[in-house]
Length: 209
Image (cartoon, rainbow, N blue to C red; front, side, top):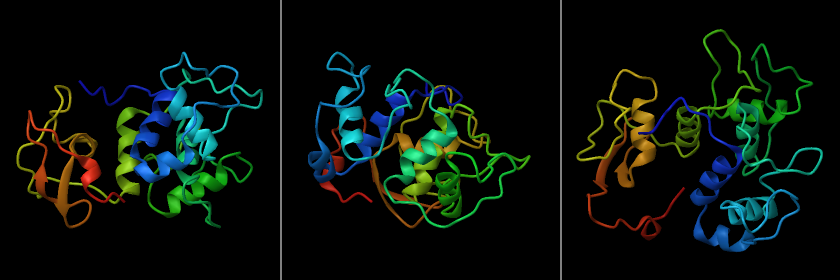
């Protein structure tokens, strides 16, 4: 199962983003040492969190702790991703994100690039825990990746709880779950090669965005 509406933790999201980095960038920031008193070598996410802090992509709370088991909020997730690109002078119109919000410039930047969108009521809900489906959708938007019903997919792997093609996240999850080569742009990629069950697909063989 994928469990699209489940929350993800700060440790899980940091590890997920770390794994998306090119190998050259991973090597440049690689470390197992960090400033967080609650992240040491016994934690499964130590390398990812330590390296991401070293790269300037993640920070702890005001008391210095990382709290990897905490659910990551929509504001925190947007902030972590924008750290890779830098903020711009954008403004945002979400009714619940005031200019005084600590993550305003990060949310505004992400919104200006089309990486994040609000809810139908015009809110962003920055302090709400982000779901797994929302997280992979944002990453797809950043990578300008996406398929839809008109795309040629061929064989692909899916999850037992991602079978409703009418769900807003259905194709986003498929996009994120499958290694593939493609032509075109989101949301109408045509896959030219995708993973074959039982065959090792070397994603490092191809250039990544």
